[in-house]
Amino acid sequence: MSVPFQCLCMLGQSSILCAAKGTSIHTFDLGAGLSHVSSWIHPRTKQVGNSDPEATSQDQGLENQESEQPPSKKRRLNSDEKPNDEAKANQEETGAVEATENGDGEKKKKKQKPEYHAPRPELPFVALLTATKDGSHLVAVTGQDKTLWVFEHDGNGVLKELSQRVMPKRPSSVSITPDGESILSADKFGDVYSLPLLPSAPSEAADAPTPASEPASAAAAPSAVKPAASRFTVHSKRNLRALEEQERILAKRKEAPKESPKPEYEPILGHVSMLTALATAASDGKPYIITADRDEHIRVSRGVPQAHVVENYCLGHESFLNALCVPASRPEILVSGGGDDELFLWNWKAGRLIGKADVLGHVRNVVPDASRVAVSQVYSYDTEERCYVVVICELVPALFIFQLQQDTLEHAQMLDLAGNPLDATIIAKAEGPLRLVVAVDPLRSTETETEAQGDAQSLLLFERDEAGNWVRGEDVPDVSSADLGLSREELESILYPVEKLRKTEFEDDAEGGGSAGGSIAP
Image 1 (tube, rainbow, N blue to C red):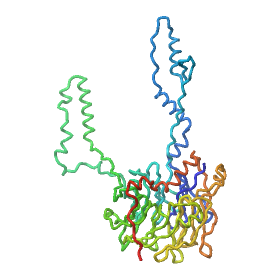
Image 2: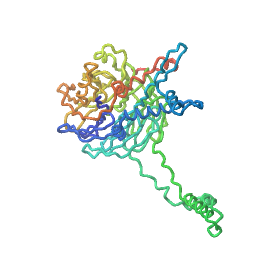
Image 3: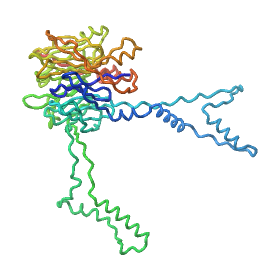
Image 4: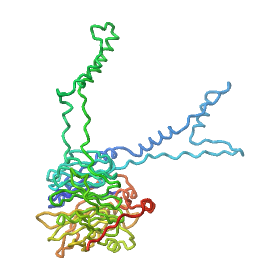
């Protein structure tokens, strides 16, 4: 089954677009020609593609059956019984189908054990993409292996892999600090880690000689196990070999032990619930970290190195949170969304709720029987001294665009799509018009139609008309990729994880039902 593009990211102010498709990352030049530039494929995907999964599953199944098969019973041989009879009896007992006689003399067959199929390994889909402001580096997260990848961009769309670091838990959101020096990674266990964008060189401290100020006891420790015998006091060959072995072990102990490299990431703050979104902000020249979790909480913390200091909380959501956005032209405003029917507008520095904007009502114009929404992404862009917010709702084939007024969000446009949007990004260049790229999961017209979906367009390009509305433009060319062998159900479980954050009635009852409410400012 064809896999759509699921993550998008622009590399700075250039015309280079990064788009993740399954387990690979592709770059496109959206300047002249909309051409494909380069590709990066996860190494594990190459290994899976070179292996034969059916043969592997059959081999594992045979091994499993052999390990679970009980040993054959030993039979006492009579004097007139031949070994061939014993082999025949054992073959009958250990066969997959065994015939026995019941009380009526009829024969019945034992049921054959079901064939064992090895579970399919989870593929390392690219879950997150973000880049530095100047577009010199790209950060990607693959969810299955919890790996954070850093790539160097040469300025022309070619990516060079610099590092891969396995995080303690699977990251759920990442952001790069405004100075472009550190990466903030939030995981599903409620912790936020800070790690350098570029990993430091291996420490040479282990190879350095022992300083003279080290205690004498530490320096004399290796000599304490020096054998009392020497080559002059040992006369037999056997004892000489034993002495040589002791000297060899002693020489290894004298070598300065190399310390294992310490992990470069350090926890800077934490929630008691699953973290779902992370954003950075600034006020009065001071950096702040804004985090949201599944328990309807938004926390405002100071920036590194004082991230443990909590400035305030933004409380008011009644369902899970999944998206945070601080508009560049309105840095004092925070827009949040998730499982509630509205978008929330905050003065995040004061922890004050300013207003709400209805989303469910607009979703019902596309999906009439919708009873709730799950906001997956919130973005902002500026044009003509106006600020707009783009909202993506899971499994809703449309984009919802709001204009940010002084203290309200006014609905400006609903952009119908030919599929469910998975991600979007704004192309804002100093020269040229504003453009919008949307990654969609193409809709099927029938349940059995698979060929049409493979040919459907996944990257859509929009431009603004004279009235300021988004209209369909020239599409970005698709890139063929290897078949990952996923069923439609497996693909949807990977592409649409947001609604799974919603708590069940049992979880709500166990926690006492709901959270603290916020007040709308006059």
